[in-house]
Amino acid sequence: VAVEALYAFGTLAVEAAGADRRDLLRVSGPDLGAMLGVSDPALRLAAVRVIGRLLAPRPLDEAVDERAADAVITVLNDKEADIRVAAMEALGALRYQRAVQALTDLVRFYSRGSAAEAALDALARIAHESSAPLFTAQLAGRNATLKAIAVEGLARLGSRGNADAIQGALSGERNEAVLAASRFAAVLLSNGSIDPIVDDLRRAKLHDRALDYLIEIARGRTALFTRAVQDPDARIRVGVVDALGLSADEAALPLVEPLARDADPQVSRAAARAVARLRAGSRVS
Image (cartoon, rainbow, N blue to C red; front, top):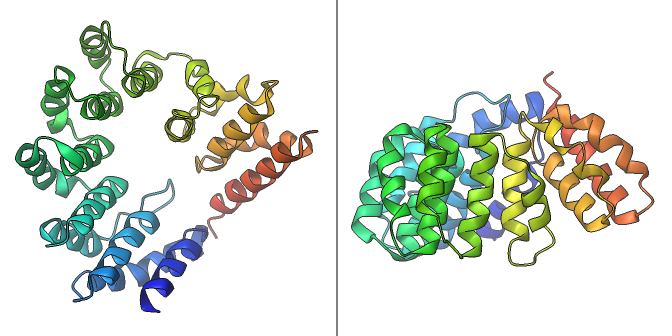
């Protein structure tokens, strides 16, 4: 019951916004961190997952609760493999820079497999400049998953020089995930068009990856989506509206609000959800 209650809390609490969210984070952060020390592995796993989901920073948030985040770092040594991986994912979601050294050590220790991928992905989301050599080294490897993650990390670092390194390393690349990551990097590093990523929404294997990229791109770049919200394909409009709604950028409202009257019911419902999320996120009182 405790585990199910904790997951239910995590599902409901993420909808809080403005002052309600700030108050909730102040109260829940320490309690969630304390749960990482309980003996029940199912409860530890639930707690680390809720921390990663609930405490993931939003534009108007205060600093991440260090007590909770430091507790997640300690869980990197948990005896349960799934909890260790969940801790890596949570630290990436939190973008917690104090975890960089521990995660780097884990990448080097595991070198391959799901644990190495999770640790590298966390570093790619934190995007600390000290990780650049590690990302660059992965570009020359044969592991497509690690290579795609490395491209994402270099993209988030923001240095335009990384665009040349990515382009040179991926000459002749055929892996779809790596190529999708390179399209994400082109937007962040070279002011590329989002159209190729929007097109990936049509492909089942790349849809979720493309949606994640568009959510991230949308923050501060909503003007790039002007054409995409008018795409004749309703499936594309739904995906783009979902991305804008989850971007936590209220500047997306002028693009999303007209689609609440879209002739396609799936689009109009998606737009209504997006408008509600964006308006809730803009409340600061």
